[in-house]
Length: 262
Ligand code: PEP
Ligand code: MN
Image (cartoon, rainbow, N blue to C red; front, side, top):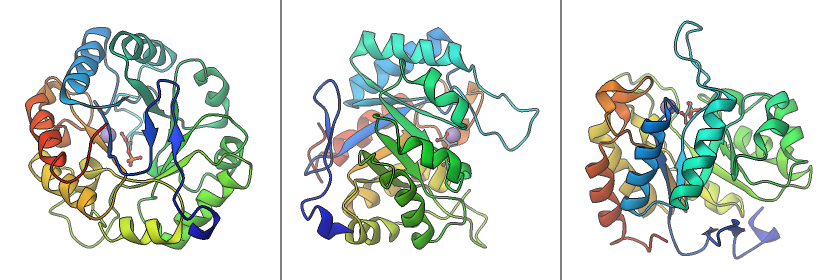
């Protein structure tokens, strides 16, 4: 509950970046790490746009077992390398308990994906690590269920937790999911945790990502998690919702009119 920390949780990362508070944090990058060239260029573009975190999946939760499953540990090593080159923090998805330990040396923040929001054993284990976690809302999870999943991590003693609205499944099919902007102020009221918006998975079509990013911040989001690819048409996953680098640049400039991006 918010009464635990009326001013809200602030998370300080190793390079001094603080999540929570008055500023907006930008986490951006491709859906998946695909190669050294791709992730290095992505990192340089995220840095140039004004982002603080590089995102990129090394372990990918794909709907089809025949789709690209990610580069695994090799992808984590590349993330760390390009994070160090550019000074960006690294956030990437953890899918199972056995990955936690091997991931620790390479990452700054664990991402729990929508499909694992109710993987309670994984959440419990993440309560025992000393590394921040960003927990995404499940594809059809209620707010109450998000809160209870968060509680699995918090009750283990890890208070460095962020929540993320990434769209929920509704009857609407024009967009990939229905971005529930209202979840942002509701979660801000009910918890002391920083709340992020992920408009990329929220809508699934890049042209609608900037307006939903702006809407998220206008609704009180502490940060955004967004997909951007140096060449979205060639992306191995989620190309259609990945911003072009110049779109990210322009969007961050627009966001600066709503809140400081640092
Ligand atoms: C992702 O961020 O690439 C991802 C798989 O997101 P989600 O878990 O929200 O589907
Ligand atoms: Mn994705």
